[in-house]
Length: 380
Ligand SMILES: Cc1cc2nc3c(=O)[nH]c(=O)nc-3n(C[C@H](O)[C@H](O)[C@H](O)COP(=O)(O)OP(=O)(O)OC[C@H]3O[C@@H](n4cnc5c(N)ncnc54)[C@H](O)[C@@H]3O)c2cc1C
Image 1 (cartoon, rainbow, N blue to C red):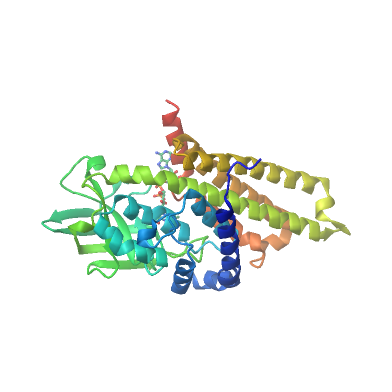
Image 2 (cartoon, rainbow, N blue to C red):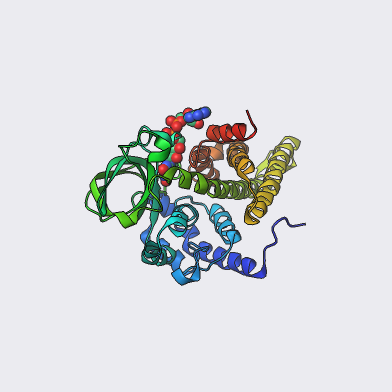
């Protein structure tokens, strides 16, 4: 029995998306990898085809769809041989801050462009000295009359090079308590005082642009603050949960893709005249992978269904983020082992899958931080 009851509309949407990705993404994955970035044009193509920000209400140009549309996009993107097109980050992580906490004026100004792909977004929390511990954020936001002056720097920001709009976490330097000092601001990339630093050369996810951002006396209108002053920490805590759930969804779909590819490889590769998949040792390795993936899929689908029903799934989401991303890494590692020397060649698709898997245990809250959250909720 299916755990998620997808409707006919969901199925049709998935089919259309698969066709789109096959035509507009998969053939270019290799080029994007070499370029270390995806082209702007793919954002507008994706937006125009209706695959960005599916949950944004129709009055701002969106589909007004439920969480399952986001799940479908995350899954299908994970099945493509690239991880540079950070559409789930844009649609399910950054834009929801504007949609949920932005004023009506901000929503009207930015959401239609976010949906159409004309505006690409980024979320800037991390700083050189503040990663896991957001209480260490030093970027200052000083509110002066009807303006805010932002000073500081951010690093490891996904979409950092392409972003037109950045949601920035910054603190009032006059407030000592970090949990009361943080607010979120929307900064347009052509604002004087905003600049981009290095495009970071990463060990994986080559085609995703990850960059440093600088703010030097960067003045924005006070209307660009998201919600009340000083509630940034709470806003981040609220929205980081769905981000982690989407990470788990993407991880399990990525693991399924790796398993499928590895099964095919082992069936079609012969050693001493017989298919690799006929060796019992290989069969056991594949069966163990398949069992892990199946268990993960069942857990994640149940979690998605519970989240969609509005249930509190903080513990399970944190568990799923660390467990599925660890699983993705285990499966990618096993796949590479089964490829033998072929798995050491750049042309082996599992090499990129293995490289790209690593970062999933780090971003969106490291797996250690996830375990810390679970421990706290379990009363330890
Ligand atoms: C490719 C990539 C994309 C990213 N995209 C973004 C983005 O778009 N926006 C953004 O704001 N950030 C982004 N990040 C940053 C990411 O969120 C941070 O790397 C992450 O939060 C961890 O912070 P850190 O790297 O500073 O590690 P640290 O916090 O310095 O941690 C180092 C190690 O110590 C462990 N550790 C730290 N604190 C604890 C604790 N309390 N208990 C147990 N263990 C602990 C960590 O688990 C880790 O193993 C990205 C990072 C990468 C690599």
